[in-house]
Length: 71
Image 1 (cartoon, rainbow, N blue to C red):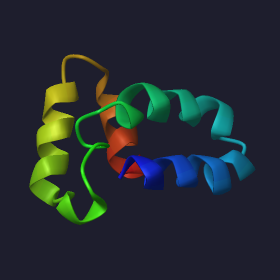
Image 2 (cartoon, helix red, strand yellow):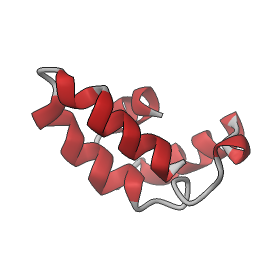
Image 3 (tube, rainbow, N blue to C red):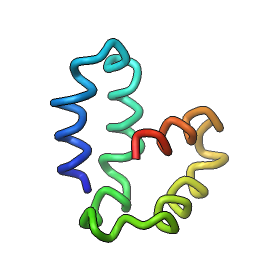
């Protein structure tokens, strides 16, 4: 999943005005996460919710919602 996130950062997000705001959040919270270490086929709604639930309290609700959208 990490390789997919990196590709998305480089080929999709980098071409948007939101890149400077969003790339840091993706790098900080997603690229080094346990979720990123999984193969894409192993990413399930349950794993995503487990990951996002762990972020509650660590980050703002807004950041959690952004992470959900990025995933």
